[in-house]
Amino acid sequence: MCELIDTIQEDAWFAFCDLVILALNHEQQHQELLLTDLKFILACNPLRPAYLDNLDHLNLQVDVPKVKAIAFAGGVFEIGHTGQGFHYDNEGPVHQVYVHDFALQNRLVTNREYLAFVEDSGYSNFEWWLSDAWRMVQDSGWQAPLYWEQHDSEWYEFTLGGLQKLNLDAPVCHVSYYEAEAFAYWSGKRLPTEAEWEVGAQQVNAEPCGGNFYDAKQFHPMPVAHNENVMHQLMGDVWEWTTSGYLPYPRYKRFAGPLGEYNGKFMINQMVLRGGSCATSENHIRITYRNFFKPDKRWQFKGIRLADRV
Image 1 (tube, rainbow, N blue to C red):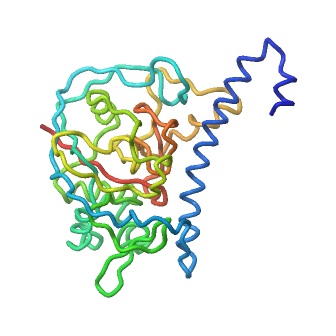
Image 2: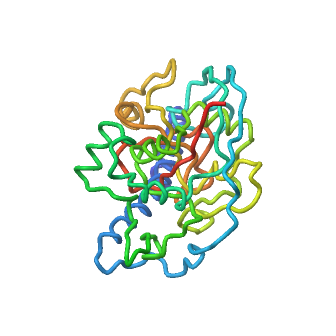
């Protein structure tokens, strides 16, 4: 890189810097993918080796706050990236959206809550599932989230610390959009739109600082304790599914050339996630950050925050 930098002409310097900054942020994305890919590879190994052997905190039991809907007034709001600092092209342009009054639950859905869905024949009752989702459940034989397994009536979960007894207080993770949507419907709730998520995050001044990201070295979503009156876990722990398709914002223009391969070409058949995860670098995330995956994918740290009308 130093040799390359020495060859850059002055009139190309700013364009070169933009490319390097993009590459560094892209590398952070790959660091997250390495962790999640390694977890999948180790889970497929019959010996179930652990990536790390010092993750005793995965069994932490806490007094999880009672689930509570926090209401937000509707209206016209601006979303999208503003100000200084790096952001991806899909985070803009800034534009106005109208949202109706809505509510977001004060914390993520826990394993205990999701297990109730599993034990209520959630995966064998077509009523809860979208058509494509039900086909996927049947074709793939899903019976629980990825990495869950049952031994002698006890539930376990494969983690980066190896096979662990399922921590019922921890946020459920490794669920597809299909599973998140089915659980929300079964619960009598829904998933938030990405506009609702971002407006809610704006109004509670959500920041990455102190969240459960890669930097905390927890390597798994962790339970949250106490205080049901504030919003928990908006940033970190798990990527949160929204009910919004990954589409361009108004006035978005895809880059020409190789950079057009980065975000714009994927704006089809994918759903938006927000907030980052325990495998995301803390300085990589923003409330405007738009992650996206196909609705059947499960191997990333992806979870659920429910929403509702008020």
